[in-house]
Image (cartoon, rainbow, N blue to C red; front, top):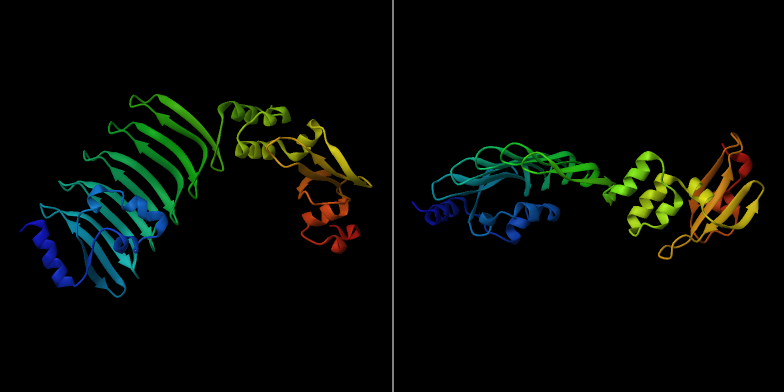
Length: 290
């Protein structure tokens, strides 16, 4: 019995069939569909649907040799639970887990030889934790950490012989140049280094690492207004960035000064400090600070 005839009989038996396109896409959240449908064999086969219980079903496809090409389970119309994809000869190719249409849990992929190719965990559709990729000889191909889909920290890329070929550093998904990362790690980052950085996202990361207090000390600035020991200041710092407005305020209990960024429409120290407490200027009562 050839593949087409078998699938036709299955369609007649189960009264429903899935084919490439929107029918399959409707089962999977948009953010996951591209990954799921990326396999070439998903574009030309007939997908059979079998109800397995209340609100439960599975979709699958069989190859010419009768071996299932893939099998995914559904719950309330969304792919849910474990899904498996096989090579033509029956070796496992991909094993992944879904929760209501989103990748969730352990995801593993193999070479046809049975050697592990990739291992990563997902949470609500996002890579989470360490993702490991391997060459077929078992050596690392890449290694890096993700937090809810955002690359973090050091990501390493290797040659097939095991030598590190590339090293990338990420902070909250932003790729940090090697020289900048070395300055940050050594504590030698200064305001003048930040001014020379071309990438706006990297500048933002560096500003947060340096702290606004140190940035203010190292930059020329304009004092807009002063109230007792507190100041509202403006820093014109980069041609491609809006001016930075900071309020420098003294804690009444500890005597320590804090430097906080505020919106550029602040006109007085009191208004700026009130904004940091998320209250209107008229509601801010300094004597009641705790």
